Structure formats: structure tokens, C-alpha cells
Amino acid sequence: PSSSELHQRWYTADDKTRFKRILARDVRRMISIVSSTPGECLSTEVLEACVGIEIFLSRDLAQRTREKRARHMIGVLNESGRQGRSERIDDERLSRVSEKTSRWARDRAFELAVGYWELFREMEE
Image 1: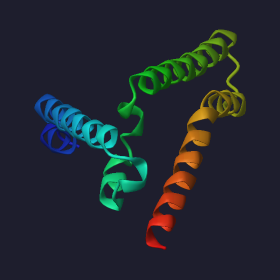
Image 2: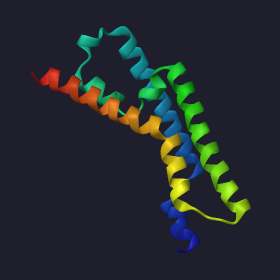
Image 3: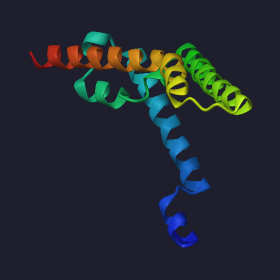
């Protein structure tokens, strides 16, 4: 692809800055709503607005998530470096390391999906 095509495909620095501002605004709004509304009174619309930004609703959870992501990245990079130094590439081992260090993310996604499903199901009844 030409540089013009690449420029059209990728987000600019201004786009990324705008996305971050929108995310921060949405998180502040949801924190305000969720913290001032009893759980049983949260509407489906509010819960749907929280999908994808759950980790930002709690500083502690956001920090733990950053730490887990960093450990995952370090684990994969360490294994990749080890394989590079030994000149023996083992895609399966690298895949297992990645799977092991990211297990928390899959578990969390599953728990969130089940939690949202149960909430929405209860709200429909």
C-alpha cells in the first residue's frame, strides 16, 4: 500500500488523543452514575454503557490489570528472547506461554459475560 493508503487506514495522533478524551469522559460519567445509583436501580442502558470499560471504573482494578498485562508481555518477550538466543524456535511453546500468562484475561472475560448475561436476563423478567 502507498503511504497515502496507509495514512487513511491508521489512526492519526489526533484521532488517538480524541479517543482517549472520549474514553476518559465516558468513564467519569459512568463512575458518577454507578457510584450514585443502587445496583438494582441501574438501567440496562447504563449497564450496556459499562461494557468494555469495566476496568476503568476502579483504580485498583485498572492497576491490577496493567500489572497483569505487563507480566503477560514480559513472559512472552522473555520466551521469545530465550528461543532467539538458543536459535531454536518453538511456536507451540511460545503459544503455551502466551496462553498461560493471559489466562486471567480469558477468565475475566468469561466472568463478565456471565455476569452481564445474568443481569440482563433478570432485568427482562
